[in-house]
Amino acid sequence: MDTNEPVAIKLIKKSLLNNQIKKELLLSEVRVMKKLKPQDSNNIVKLIEFIETSRNCYFILEYCNGKKLIYLKLSDQKVGI
Image (tube, rainbow, N blue to C red; front, top):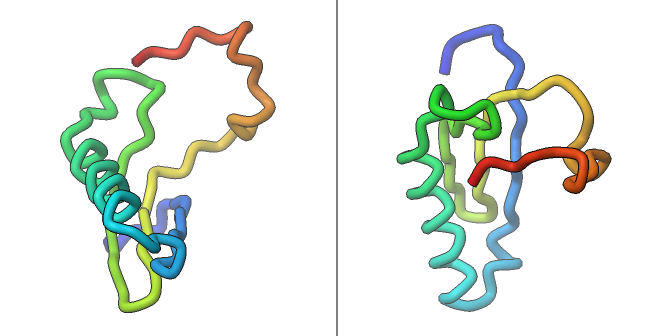
């Protein structure tokens, strides 16, 4: 990635992936995010890159400027799935 665009980074400590099920769920999330087409819906955050080191996993994500999701009331918002 060689742009000046802001990104969001989601960090997962591998020490928290203490069983095979959690590891598989993480890898499943990566596979799904790679298949999703952000242009198909404005409710999808684009996965730019996934980086795995010996201690951590990093999701490099499209930066979405605005409110934090926790502050949005789902009753007031339609969520596309």
